[in-house]
Length: 104
Image (cartoon, rainbow, N blue to C red; front, side):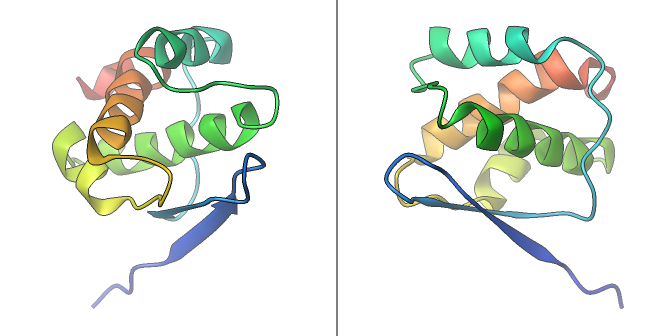
C-alpha cells in the first residue's frame, strides 16, 4: 500500500498554510506568468509574496492531474484556511489549463 505524503508550503501572505498531497512537482509545459494571470483573472489574489507558493501549488496539482485525478478531485484534496473550495478549484483548473494541458 502506497503511503500518501503531504507537503506544506507556507504562503507569505498572512502565514497561511497550503497543504497538498503528491510526490514531486510536474514539469510545467507553459509559461508560469500565464498561470498567474489566469488566477488573477479568476479573482485569486496574486502578489509577489504569494506567487511562488501558487506556482508550486499549480505544479503539485499537475502531478495529481497527471496521475489521473480530475480537477474536482484535486481541489477537494487540498486545504488552505485562507481559500475557499472554489478558490482551490480555480487554482487546479488554471493549473490544468496553463501548466499541464495534456491532462485535460
